[in-house]
Image (cartoon, rainbow, N blue to C red; front, side, top):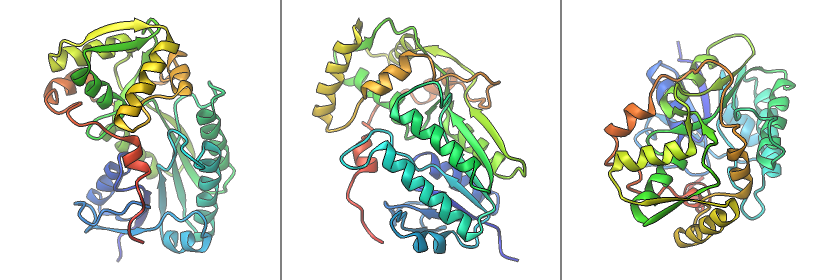
Length: 308
């Protein structure tokens, strides 16, 4: 008998690659929907790639036909050009509709912790898609991560990169707002776990440790043994500095909406933690790697599409 087939959006990207690898380990066949195929990726030999073509519903249906579960990690972190959060919501609705037409049994949707706690376009979009999943008629699991860390992450890695390369690092405000990071492998394991369940579920994906932003920055600073001076600035000045640094690296370091959401303590879970990996254990093992290379949001998600 053929192995069950699952579809993962972005299996050559960040969280999607860990989900795909885990599904393969469990004997599932995996397809991916992506606009950035990587023929030289170690997973490429084991995964069939299809275009993530939101404008062609029939093409999406064909790629999803025969699949049991769709693991959807597609989203837009920071709008760029015509690709806004509103467009990302419409794109995802088209993907959900294609999954329904294709006879997909279950969808596992990556959302965000506390999706109704902010009026930002990012959070409004995530909340709207949760409702779209609930009303789709498909069996579903909605997973709400706080903040991911681990090999390939953006935020924590780039804080570390800045600490390695700048003489001064500015913390917006008092730095007493909180984060609850979860390791990407723990997060992927939770996605696959709820994907295998029959019941409709909504769960948070959060790690076992909570830090203030100030504590996180100093934790990274100590782990890497750097001497960067850490200062506190009013948010408007810190954002100005982030904008200048963003232009230097040709990337989006931080948006004002992201900073406002961070400072309102919504990257926290109100459920027991699902992750087990401690950032305080992980960092000493990766002190020579974290922040060694800058992780570009634009290079990762907005580089020219190659291949079919």
